Amino acid sequence: MTQTARIISTYTADVSGVNSALFELGGMTVMHDASGCNSTYNTHDEPRWYDHDSLVFLSGISEMEAIMGDDEKLISDIVSAAQQLHPKFIAIAGTPIPMMIGTDFRAVASVVEHRTGIPAFGFATNGMHTYVQGASLALAGIADRFVTESKPKTSEISVNLLGVTPLDFSINGSAEHLRTALETHGISVVSNWAMGDSLETLQNAPSAHVDLVVSHAGMGAAKVLQQRFDIPYVIGRPYGKWTERLAEHIRKAAGSGENLSPQTDRSDASCVIIGEGISSVSLANALTIETGIPARAVAATECERAILGASDVIARDEDELLPLLQEAKTIIADPLYQPICPKTAQFIRLPHEGFSGRIFRSEIPDMTEDISYITQAIAGRS
Image 1 (cartoon, helix red, strand yellow):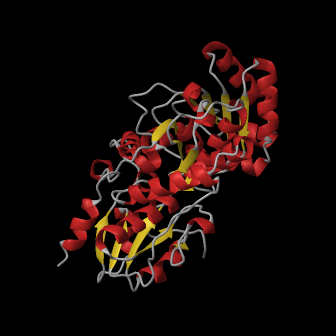
Image 2 (cartoon, rainbow, N blue to C red; image 1 turned 120 degrees about the vertical axis):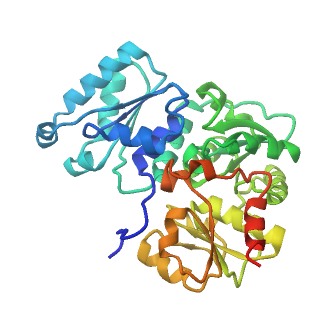
């Protein structure tokens, strides 16, 4: 049976991805769902909840409202809150119940915007997809609505970091070190989408020469910015010595205007890395460069096939993963994957906030500039 997990956990849902992507941008996000689901979001998916103010609300849809389809109550509640709180924008995201009753989120957002005069988005998320899809929709919406004016390019080669959320980067310093890692190679960062920068900073995105898509959550925004401002994108997350290869491709893309997804030769891989697609591919490339050990990336979230290397695969279901792991000598993944891994394989714990939430947060390493956490663990086997 596909899309069923008997043993392993599931990834954070698309509605939380919307919230995570927009959390620091000064807007108001509303999850259209039953009471209690906001606690699931702030307990498991949002490590910034107690340290950073943000307007994240739940509509509290009742059984009768779901049956009768009372959209006016949802609209009125949002309008009332917005008139008191004055957010920069309003985002309304769906869950399974609104999906089943056919809620038209674009129409709801249109009415809300008309009544408040505040830009509003409607995202037809439904809880059936991972955070990657929701975050990509949200950041694409920001790019489409707020990044509208061309800007002079910076004097030095520069990038926008697209797809930065704590679901992939946690709160261990990784998001901040993306900037310093690139600066070491002579590349400046114009904007970070979306940890550490404001909505106003994101509006400077057209002044960058290239977009660096560091997780699949940034793909939607990358395509909007390319279509509107002809900004090419490079796909990859900085990891150790792999960052130098990424920097070379960023400079190449800035000169040629072509989109690039750099890879290393990783055929005949006996090491498997499971996780978000771009992060897993980048770590596999970094591991190959630094150790000579070819690694295979397994994208367990939504991912475009063109992003992956020849030996990489997309496997989002437990039944798809099981046969891929049987011949692996080393498996690098979140600890909650270990029960389905063969006991003969070396298992290296690499916790992922978007998969196991806060359970192993203290163990999540920052490998932006140094992947010795992995290389030493592999060497320790012998």
